[in-house]
Image (cartoon, rainbow, N blue to C red; front, side, top):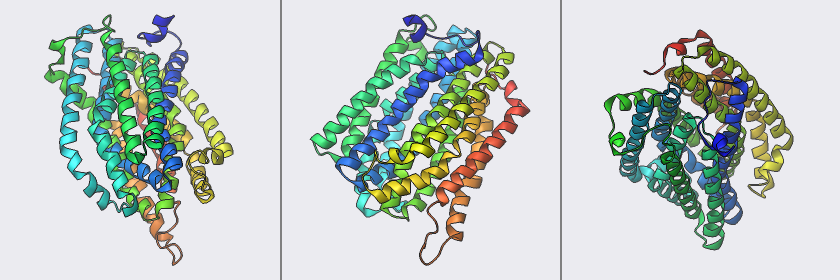
Length: 457
């Protein structure tokens, strides 16, 4: 039984919906645990330091996400390569792919720290970050960047492990790290009065632990691949494949993060209270979006293994069944948020005005989760099959071409003497609109079926 749960899973046989659901459930729990990193950070600083510290952590996140786009791309490429080579039962190719991913990640970590660290404060100033939270934001980002290897290697190594069908081990390691993060958050902030720097340090330490555990697990999966120094030397063909698969996903995340940074500049104009409200919304949104993201990853692994095994009949059937499950789950989450949303806001702050503002804005976002279930599931199928370019273009169109301009347009058109920057809801309205249109466009691209010819060799 332990081998079944903590070992690789062949998704090319058996009932598609059962395979997808069994693979997704641990990931949902794991993604919720990962979301707890930033959520606990927000709760602790909000309770023990104040609303401005809460705003500082939230204002830092879009910039931090922007810095992580490179590793997200590597992680997606690693997951697809592992899934397709595992499905094709190609031991040699799987071994080289894993070694290449490990080495490329190390190089990327060093390069990012050297290049990005000097520009943290200038970026914050350029984004109109209020002086009251500027130093806190800089501390949070600097510590997070210096310790970036923990987050990077957890994402890359867990992506490889999931690509071979094991979603339980990554969950277990993440739960351990989450407990460590919570304990250290409280100790550093409440016990040592380290403030925002304390929650950043706690998160870095916890992420390093989760990445070490993933590495130990991977080194013990020798029944599926070989692990040694000769495989760590990057071979051109595997680096090229990694870039081909991962770069579009990295660009997609960069587009989304860039949009968040641009919109953050608009958000900052509404003041500290609205910034804090958006932090609360992002935390609740993070949990609400977890099932969608988990189904997207599951569909990618499922499609990757079956494409590797040349089982396109199973890909189509699994896509339909997985989509039904994802949409049903998103509908239930939307209903729960509309009913219990205000209670969730009370977890982050005791300020009534902040609670009410956060809940009103959250109700706008809630209706978009069903659309995101469609986008994530079908995009996952296309990525798993090797087509990472189509989801990138869809993201480019809906985010840069629609969301950002629409947010500023609504803000401009609703300006009055009483509302010099327009209505605050402009950000949420533009985001939901982009989600809905994105779902429609993604469905069209999936039905056209060009992803069927994108399998890696």
